[in-house]
Image 1 (tube, rainbow, N blue to C red):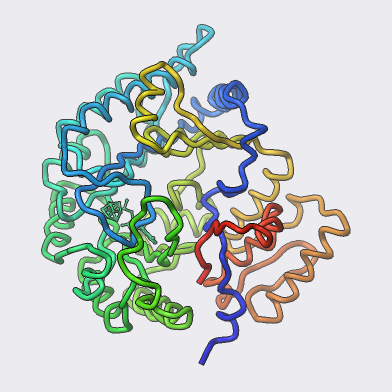
Image 2: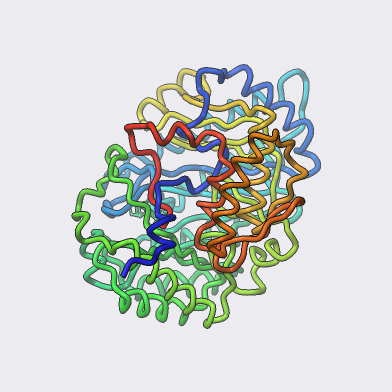
Length: 460
Ligand SMILES: C[S@@+](CC[C@H](N)C(=O)[O-])C[C@H]1O[C@@H](n2cnc3c(N)ncnc32)[C@H](O)[C@@H]1O
Ligand code: SF4
């Protein structure tokens, strides 16, 4: 029987790694000079105090997983490594040149550095060493940096782990998805547990303090038994963090290869919710704490400490333990955030490389925040990171408040939250519906109702 809450709240909605979300960026009002000016202002204000965050996108994978929604290029040709790293280093030099213009000689201080993909471990340790040597030739680490990377268990070697450790990386996440062979076949992801064991043990022996495993619920052919078994096997490794992602079914994204199975192979919304509930209960029984959406951590992990002390932050890299004023994104498709503006790089790798070679920042779209954007962004971050929001950050008009109150009344009647004149607090029953609650504050979503083009995955 259909759970009425699931029937009601299973709508298409954003995951809010940014507000406004990418489809609603006002690119017409964005200009490169504006972005550069906001970047240099934020850099002058925050670099010496907090340092900056850097995300580097390494887009290649050797084999296509047919569920994957990441920006990636599938190839077995490792000849692409060197020119790609050259482009990223050239892009980095463009940024550092921009930041040190007008006689400013302050070097960027890297508080956070994340290598994501695609598959960073597609690249050889020697190329990764060349990348990081080039990055740190123009920047310095902060005192307590947080550097992390994503490895594929099937091609990560002790050489990769050691090379990145030597540059200060202490966190690594490995894609697992699901151990059930039926699910693995459907998503074209052969993922032996032996490989996960090998890389997890190697990371710990080398000295990584946080290992994370990525699991996904809602995959084709996934059953209660698959989730139970996958979580039991994962718990045996005691990773410090476990990402438990809701499968985002976004088959309309160009070239993402999700057509490898049919919609009929996917669990229904009710069954998917059951998989999540089961997974959550097993993870909590195993001693993990749920962090915002999609994430679980052991109590001693800094992600849980950040949630307890209220410093948890969410950006394009997902949940982070702190908020720096600047997140720069390097590489094809990367996204950046300077607090008052977002940008995204060209997604096509050849075009990205041609732009960088021509000495241009390869930015193709962006958004300059309005005052209202910044206020709403704060409310949404408070909901997703702190499970509460305080109305004092926003000056509501009577009409706005009336519309919002109507939606909040609905959530309250369903037991998802409590609210009063000062703010709201999400109740435990509301945690699976954080995206829905955040959507009530999203000022851009009204157009979605009339949009013919699908933009977001389902919230359940
Ligand atoms: C860049 S991959 C991780 C590193 C490496 N490429 C790998 O697969 O092992 C990022 C993670 O995003 C998650 N992911 C990818 N596509 C997804 C989708 N459609 N829905 C939910 N999670 C997804 C997977 O858990 C995957 O491990
Ligand atoms: S899940 Fe990882 S390895 Fe598979 S296609 Fe996506 S990025 Fe590549």
